[in-house]
Image (cartoon, rainbow, N blue to C red; front, side, top):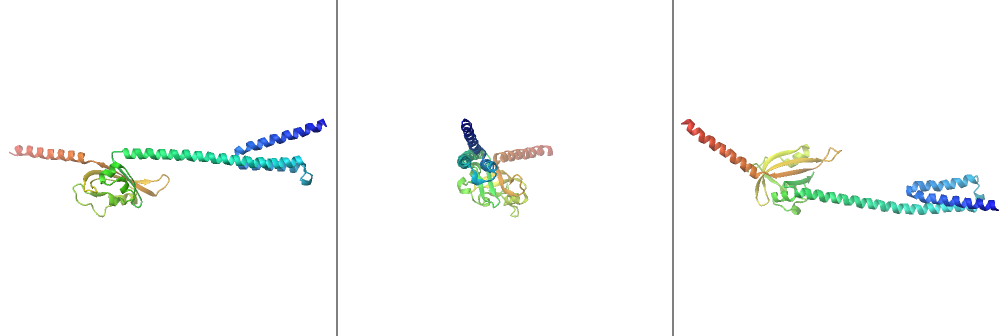
Length: 245
């Protein structure tokens, strides 16, 4: 009787240890839980040589207990997994939002005008400096065709060649464009600017996603250069007169 009592106690202890192990297996996912449950079935089946009618109540309790614990561990694992993914997504969303805000602050702080347009020519981004140059508000210019917002002529005010469309050129040729032009604002404000347009190509791809235009006000620099040129021209003229005499 003492031997039988010790044997039963040992069997119950083994079952309890097995149930605890199955509960911890929930930390490793559904596949491990299913594998542990099938191990219980295989163990009982081999122990009774697949004579299922002779299975003892204790073996049935082992199978049922394994199924219940596996199901409970799966529910806990699933809840923790969803919670962990939610935390990761929230953290990633926060990081992306923070980076987007940082990029927005940097772009808006740049003294030069910055405009980004897509392959259809629609403006997706414009900073306050560019908005001031074209005399449009940031809100009004978003989603508008860049040809309607940005108007250029030659430095001397003459119209540009109609055959040259620098915005489409960059998208089609996948090459940068740089030139000094006269920018005419919405209220006819004229500003001499240095224009650089570069294509936006996503890493690993060959197609163009859009282009970014950087507009720098060089009016004062242009005026200073013009004054130097006028001074040199006047001085050379004044020096040639006495020499000729």
